[in-house]
Length: 113
Length: 109
Image (cartoon, rainbow over all chains, first blue to last red; front, side):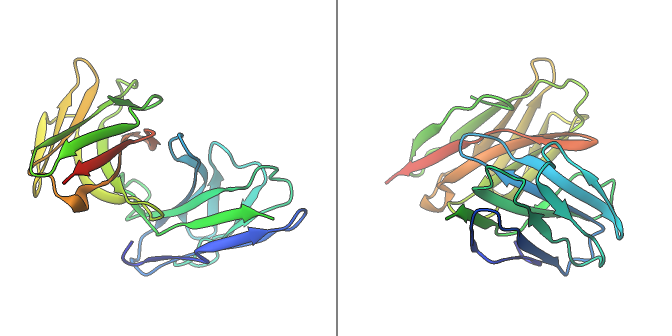
C-alpha cells in the first residue's frame, strides 16, 4: 500500500443511493486506476486516468463515475445505476502513463443493505 | 496451474519447502508480466516482474520464470514461510494489464 490510501475500509450502500470511494496517493504518480474484484475473477478495470483532468473508461465502466481534479486524488462514485455493486474495490497507481507496474491501495469493501 | 482466465484454487506446501505457482497466458503480444501477492482483506502487493526479453529473474527468495514458447509463467518461492500464505496472481501487460484469478497458497506447519 504505502503511499496509497483508500477510505472507507467498509462502505454500506442503500438501494438507489450513490456512494463515493476515496483514493489518495502521495507517490507523485501520474496514472491512477480503479478495479473491481469479485470472488473467483481477476481484477476488472473500471476507469483509469493518466493525467490530471483526463480519464478513460475501462472494461466495466457502466454505473460508475470518476473525477481527477488533482494529481493526488481519484475518487470513484458508484451510482444507483450499478445494479450489482457488492465487491472489493481497489485503487492503483502507476509512475507514468506508460509505466506498466501498478501499485495498489488497501481496498474498500462495498456492501449493499 | 493458474491461467489468465482459469485458476487452480489452492496449493498446499509444507513449511520450509519450495513453492511453485504457475500461470498460463494467452496473449503472445504481452511483453511485461507481474506477480502479485494478496493477503485476505488487503490490496495486492507487488512481488516481482519480468519482461518478455528475459527468461528468468530473481528477487529475494522468489524467482520468476518465463517460457514464451508455451506462454507460461511461474513463481518460485524458496523455503516457504507461514507469512507466505496468501493468494498469488499474475498479470500480463501490453498497453494495459490483464489479471489472472489467483492461486491460494496454504502453508502446512
